[in-house]
Length: 119
Image (tube, rainbow, N blue to C red; front, side, top):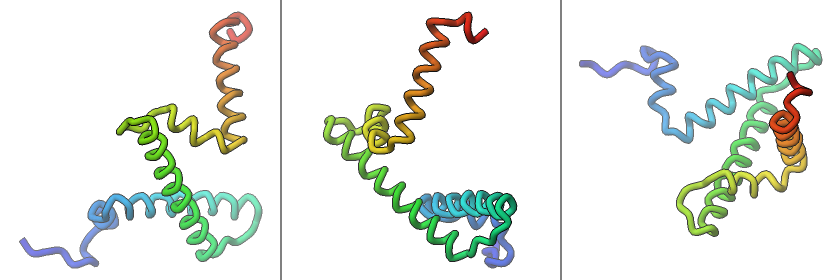
């Protein structure tokens, strides 16, 4: 069977052939681009490709830092698997995330112990 030329391959096939790290970067960029389209429409502004690339690269670097932190938290606890305790440690530095977590927690507790209010 003859090898397909790059022009003969579908985008899906090209994506599937990428290493996982490249797939993740491509998926992040696509998501950022879709969000940017919505922002452009809502705010009647134009977002350049350079801005999208910069945001995408920044997000990728932040994800890499998070992954390293999570690995280190698990290693410190003498574990080889990352668990929810590691994620909680990571989230502790993000006040907004912590605030939302506690809001969800409080609502869950209220639903469990005062169900008549929510039904």
